[in-house]
Length: 313
Image: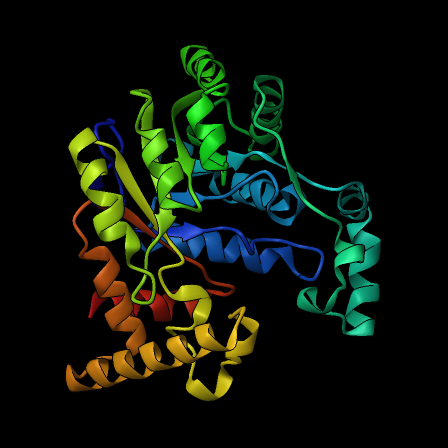
């Protein structure tokens, strides 16, 4: 367990990222409830979700799974993305669409962009207040332990239109603390201009280490908690080489060649140390000074237990 920055929260070293909890392509919500319960039973007390994950179903399942242990867990959610109308419509039709998708054997990554619809963002005070109220309803709770802006551009963070609204929601008891989930170092640094910001979420793994020198020293100096995500590089650091199609992860031949070289180097180092690559990857992130909690994702209880065993070695 670790202190969460300057807050009074204590969080588990590993947290569960809930982006893939629920969804129209999943048939059995019971398996997700088992996964969330297993995470809690294993000692994880930090659960990171968002209003857009699985069109809100992630929050619904997190709320169902954790309602009896609500005061013993830290629930973090996010808002700022606006779901296109076709996704909101699909969310209402999930009970009917799921069997059809199973028969057709359609996959999320095979759907054309015009079917998924384009995401937009809104960080206005009115939108954030409405989003937080929706999250509280879906989670069946009176408060969020942590609310985060979801991938705002640096200029939006810098402008600070969102700040008075989150302060007011904190004073009202709707949220205990607030932070920013960032896609860039610049956005994370901009967040530190606001003393009310309690956490910054960022990408950190063996393949992407820019936050170590570019962001974490400032987080430590300000007493702001660091939440590391994509700790296994979206599966690149846990999958066997034969299972990886780097073309799906990289936007250019140059990037693909660089990733291939990085993975080969890290596999060699892991073998020399007598570890698996996943084990070395998790040990790396949890060992970085300033990381309060490292998020891992899992689709099943077995997958989660395997990751936790790797992390404990």
